[in-house]
Structures are given as C-alpha cells and as structure tokens.
Image (cartoon, rainbow, N blue to C red; front, side):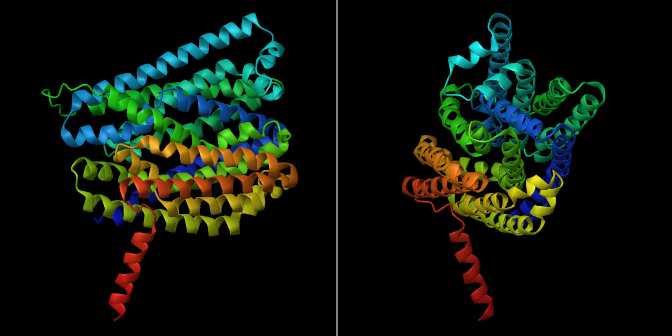
Length: 455
C-alpha cells in the first residue's frame, strides 16, 4: 500500500473515530446549553480550557516530542533509551500534579476567594473564581489528560496510531456523557457542574491508568540495544522546551483565546465562540491525523538521512491535509448553521465566525508542517519568533476587533494570527533548512504529471 493510500485510509479511520467521539461531546454541550443555560456552558468551556492548558504543561513538553523519540528509538532498536524517556515524562506529570493539588488544598483552606483574585488583578475576577472553585477536580482531570497525552505520543511513534488516539478519541467523550447524565440526575442545580467534573476526572483517571499499562506492555517486549548508554536528557530538553510552547500556541490556541476573551464577553457569548472553536478543533484533528499517521515514516527517513524519501513523504502528507481542509471548509459552509442550531437559536450568531475559523485551517495546512521540519533539523527554537508574532497579533486583534464586531471580530483576530504566524513559520523553515514545506512543490508535481499524461 502506498503512503498516500495509507495516509488517506488510516487518517480517515482515526478522524471517523474522533468524529464519533466529538459528536457525543457536541450533544453534551448542547444539552448543557439547553438544560443548564448558555452561561453554564460558557463556564464549563472556560474551565476545560484552563484544564487543557495545565495538562499540556504537566509533562514539561515531553509529550510533544514523544512520537519523534519513540520512532527514532524503535528504528534503532534502543529500548533502554525509550524506557528512560518514558520514565522522565511520567515523573514530570506526577510531580506537577502533586504540586498543583497541594497548592489548591492550601489555597482553598487558608485564603478567601476574593483574596486569590486580588493577587493577579490583570486576570478577570470571574475567571479566577471559577478556577479556584473547581481547582481539585481540575487537577485530577488535568493529570489524567497529561498521562494520556504521553501514552498517545509514544504509541503513535511505535506505529500504533489507533491505540494512541483511542483513549482520548472515544473513552473521553463517553465519560463526558456519563458524567453529565449522572450529574443531571443526582445533583442539584448549584452542584451539577462540580459533580460532573468530579465524575469525569475520576473515571478518566482510571482510563489513563489502563492506557498507561497498555503502553508498558507494548514497550516491555521492545528490542533493546544494551550497548547504547549515551545520555539523551539534554537532547530531550532541547526539543521539548520549544515544542511545548509551539503546541501551546497551536493545538491549544483557542483555549488561550477563550481565556483572553473571558473578560471581554459575557458567559453566553463566550459559549457561542467556544462552540465554534471546538468545531474548529475537531476539523483540525482530522488534519493532524494525516500528519500523525505519517510522522513515524518521516522521522525514520530523517534518522536515516534519506532526504529524498523525507521530502516525498512530507509532500504527500501536505497534499492530503490541504485536500481534507478544503472538504471540511465546504462542509462547514453547508452544515455549520444546522449544527449550531442544536445548541439553540442564539448560537446561529456563530455561523460567520465558524466559517472564518474553517478557512484558517486551509491556510495553515497550505503552509505545511514548518515547526516539525525545523525540529528535525535541530532548530526547534527558530519557530518561537513566528509564534510570538502570531500571539501578538491575536492579543491586538482581540483588543481592537472584539469591541467593534464581537464574535466576528474574535474570529477575524484568530484568522489574522494564524495566517501571519503560518507564513512566518514557512519562511523561517525555508531560510534555515532550504526546504519548502508548503503544499506548492507537491502541487507543481501533480500539475506537471497531469500535463505529461494529457500530451
């Protein structure tokens, strides 16, 4: 089976699994909006944004490069190095989780909520109060999510993408549904959200543990080169530190954006924009799945210094990713309003913002995986100026456009930020590696091949 065929088939299966799980999430969020109110949905989305960012931070960047090192150590038969990498990553999660839990316990017993909010006056007070109220549930859930992040990264690197995405793509949405139903039936109005987060956090913690044991079982029989005793920790940190910033600004861009907008929008308006961003994240996952399936092959080609094979695989992945992005954009133009209606008539205000966010995905896919190529060429830090510029555009765009055009202004600010940093990242990769990671080289090849066949 050719790489393009395998990319299309495996990424389609992974995306279908994710779509099924996301469908359950959409139904739960719609039920929260309909039964508990749009303001409660806005608070839930805001809390989950904070939890996602904390979970992303917990492994200290090691989950962002887990696929790379797992693929490299698999290709070279270096099982001992893989074990050492995993031990370091899980130790980070444990230490940060315990620290957050301790901080939350001390803060909740020694200080008043209003005192906490006054420590950081530049953060919206309602955001601080929400975080303080659900700190313990959030710490538990963030720890479980962080473990699954590391598990998934390692499994994808070992060429087990289905197992890598299974816990997050299927079990997590199922547990959200379970937590919502139990909380809706058993808890009173004031306790519903808190009970839902406790059930979700506890049950997902069990899933994370089972997923971790599955990873251990897979790595246990992994071939090991006992002669390899080189120290890799400096290399791990050199890749992980910039990549945690890269992933925070890319994969969790809208979690950061929601937190920025918490002081500029009421909870119901924030819920509308949050629903649009979650739909964008679902579409982005479909594109990410294309690269996830091809990452082990890319890394293996890079490790063997096979530049020709590496270029070909990057080009194939880009071509499939852009095609999928265009299909998703057209699909949102047609089906977007109908999906938003599920949440209530007020959510139709998100139709134009959702279309703008979908167009953002096309632009990002067209510029290609520049950050990935920079890391493979040992220049991960070169990505940071482009990301900094993009985040700066987002901050200024929100301050200027949101007061003028509300939801549409927020979407335009996000579109501008994505476009500028994607273009700068592509240019940075081109200058530093002499590789055009955009879709243009592959598109030229297709056009030339088409003309040759027609002659």
